[in-house]
Length: 138
Image (tube, rainbow, N blue to C red; front, side, top):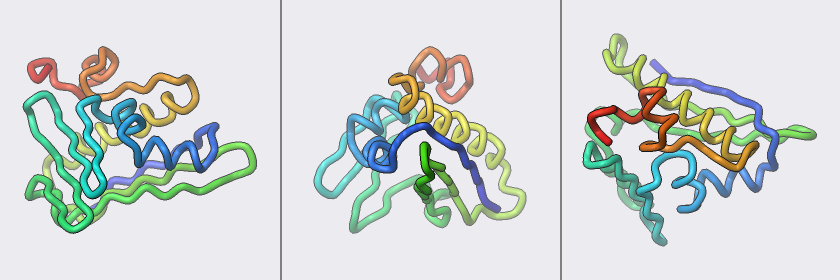
């Protein structure tokens, strides 16, 4: 089973790539506690969990190890379509609905960041209100 989201964003492919690959960009839409080095990206979620992505190693929670994440950037004349996919979940995987909801909110956060200048990353008031940041976790 897969999580799939697709959204049109009024931006350039270069700007979208930047928010998906730089510390400043990732911090503005995903989680403010983000570190990017030459070969590693680390996301911290207020003591709830830490995700580490390395070029030579993929260190994530066990249930994510077989669920690769892709961001496809498809340019159009005056906008860009972002196609998100996290694939490979087992049939009947119980947390899939919650994961899909959270990813949908984070994809929306990317759109807001690029179109208004302000995303809704983990820990922000809108993230708490939408449930992507647990009230007890922040």
